[in-house]
Image 1 (cartoon, rainbow, N blue to C red):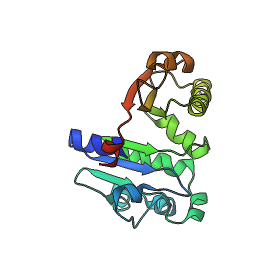
Image 2: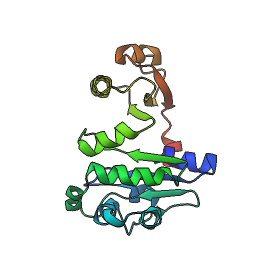
Image 3: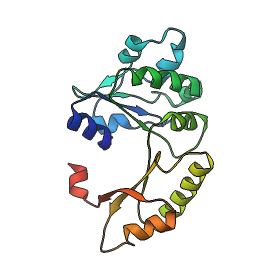
Length: 191
């Protein structure tokens, strides 16, 4: 959410966030705007979906920032298939400078379809042992799936230089260079 907001504000180009957490999407909490439509409407209207109809399903946050909500009811998640996402993302690519998809932590067919079509995949981790273990497994899975190091970018979040292992050492352990480091800054995050 913060990356999408920064892209929209910094570039002054239209940016859209797609909430792929299909059962329990939480973007409305971050944006303070309640959606009327969602990905479930995309699925229900697949036969007549075009750019104009898809844009009507988006929730406008600012002049440049929009989002496509996860289904409004958890049971609607079962109605969404990779073909719906591919169709929606294809149409969004024609309209928006930036598309940010917030994926769940599960490699299901919908997530894989989105990742396959992504230009860049940001894997966000923190420096604790459990997170690094999980991140290493995710990166190994992505390598087996054929995603190269240019497509997969590692982001180290909430980094505290004096308390944690060096960024270089983390990159060695994960066998992936850390592309971006976000320092621990609780006040900035809350603002």
